[in-house]
Image: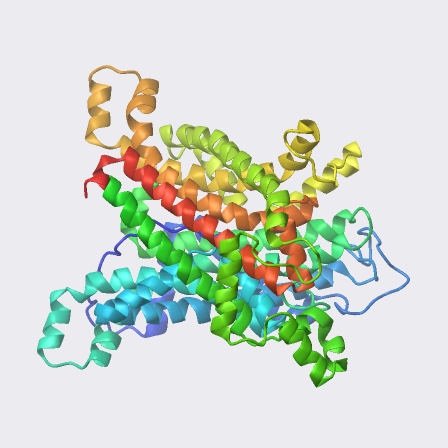
Length: 308
Length: 318
């Protein structure tokens, strides 16, 4: 669930003087400052990185094949060989949770990269050109925002038919308005700055103005937005899976596993409910807190308003 | 004030039309054959060309898209909202039968979220960065991350496990059988209410912190008012303005969030109907329900804006 953040105009950074240090070293330095200033967010950032690693290394880490049924161990509670228990057809829950991280993260990252970026580019163009294009874009974005995002994603996923790509598209479309609005607000304030004026006076083309002079100012808000929306995207993906319009089974995703557990009998076994849900919660928590940390780090003005 | 309301309503009407166009586009024009949805991919391949054409004509799907759209608008204007593929019930009947339950859940959850969120925020904001503040903030952050439907499943499971209790599954109306109705409604309402309370506590905390630093609050304190009165009479009313807006938006999201939550609890509300429509791939029901939810969302936003303008003269006179 996303709530419209209060629309803040992001403070405009000075153009940094040229530093001779390499890009990589500057990045490492920024990371160090980030960890020193907000160790809490840095810790959750590490958790997020760990989950990402688990997703990448799933085949190495998972003790069993996620799709292979073991008919001698069906619906077994957690004990020695199967630490998270097994489901009604004898698949190992731990392995399925580990493999589930792949689907979740791939969908979330894909949807945010695709949707937020598309929205950001749209917002950049509509803020920069203004006029009738901007007016129409604003209306379309308003229409898209009139749907609670889960419902829009459900409708799109259902219309396109279940599948990995369609889930990404469905979630991405719900992310477009947020990118569009935030970046447009930034562009509107940057557009009036005198250095942009100067560039225009020198005869820079529209494309050059957007790419060289306005785009850099949009990067911080874009990063804030993207990390904040990763968590939302994961929850939507899980909900879609739970409602049966997500990535189709037997692919293990956390939402599918929760939906499966309802079919496991009159009373769903607790281990089939507990572990996938914990995985969702920890992942979303990690990305949300990392997002908060990045926002505070990149946007000192908000920090003072929230933290005092 | 009146001109503001009229303007807001005008934009609202425009939005509703835009929303209907998007719904129509998504569910009718996007690839994905409705007949595949009805008969399933296997059944669809068994149909002959003539059969397909016949079914399409029968469902009114072979008309030009503009005509189909106008037919849909006519259904909405008549108030029947079209029919389900699979049931004889019209969507309007379904909404009037199941809607009240979902509306109840949504309203109770909003009340709960205020009852929990605001006190937590006040305690938090009056002593920022103390242990209590940090704990309450972490709990609210945690609740932002917990998916409501999972919490619902855990609650159902725990109450079955420890008390052998399960809420009645058949629908019960508030007037005829209030006790059964409460048992059905309370679970989803608590789950959705806690999710909102987390947002509200967060927003109210930061907005209180901002307001408390303002000059007029210092003045109130300087003239000798005790802390409790300062908060209640001076700081809180202003700090709650953004919370009202947030709560309105959250109410819209609760309607969406209630779909998986109702599935988790097995509540026979509108959210469950939406889930059924999705799993049966019932395009017509889905189309109308999505449109309905979006309209409710738009109306809620208008109500929130008007309320804010009514409470806050700074917006009214802009």
